[in-house]
Length: 102
Image (cartoon, rainbow, N blue to C red; front, side, top):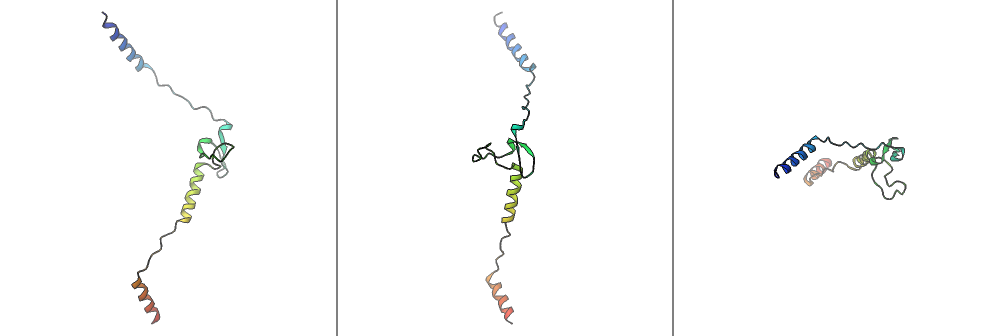
C-alpha cells in the first residue's frame, strides 16, 4: 500500500501539468509618453524604433527612427561609392600615343 500512493501523486501531477493552458501576456498599451516624433518621416513611433543615443539627455534616443537612419546611411554609401578606375596597360598607352602622332 505504501508504494501505491506516490505513484498516484506523480500521475496526478503530470495530469495537472498537461491540463494547464499557456499563459498569454499582453503588452501594455502604448501611451503618448512612450512615443517619439521622427522629423524625417513625420510619424509618432514607439521608443523602441529609435536607436539609443547617450548624448541625448532628453530621452536617450537618436532623433530619427531606425528606418530613416538606414535610408540615409544607404544613400550616403551609394553617393561615396564609385566604380573602380580601369587601368590601361603601358603597352596600350604607347600604341595610342604613336597612333596619335601619325
